[in-house]
Image (cartoon, rainbow, N blue to C red; front, side):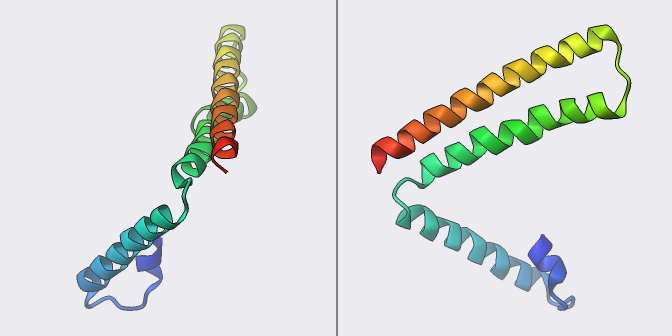
Length: 102
């Protein structure tokens, strides 16, 4: 969508949109086929960044923006500990898989 919004063509938006999306899918397939451990790299990215963006950062931003009660701080602390352990174990496992297949 970001690529489509940058193009000045507005009349044939559907045709250009289909070509851009098709090109992105084909290029992703080519990258996935040429890089032998692409799945492991995606697992590493998901384990490290996915957990950070979806679990850890919202909790930290909530603590920074709002003055939570003691019970909320305890619950958020438990979520942060669990999220951090998931991120660490997922990142470790994916790095171990990458290293073993190199």
